[in-house]
Amino acid sequence: TITRNHQCRSMWQLLKKVRHFMETASPFPGGKHGLAKV
Image 1 (tube, rainbow, N blue to C red):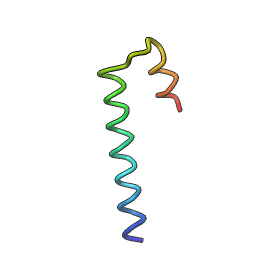
Image 2: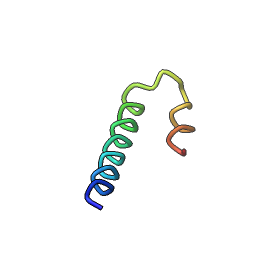
Image 3: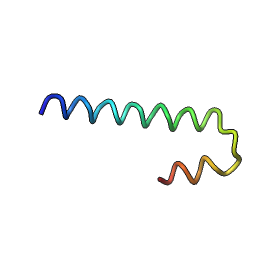
Image 4: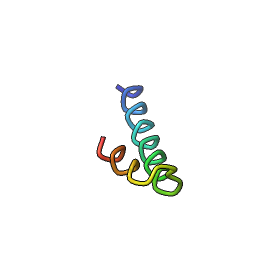
C-alpha cells in the first residue's frame, strides 16, 4: 500500500506541474483549456 500511495502522490505532483507548465507556457491559444478539461 505504501508504494501505491507514493505513486498516487507522484501522479498528483506531476499533474500539478503539467498544469502549471501549460498555464505559464502554452504554445496553443485555447489548446490549454481543452487539455485542462481532460
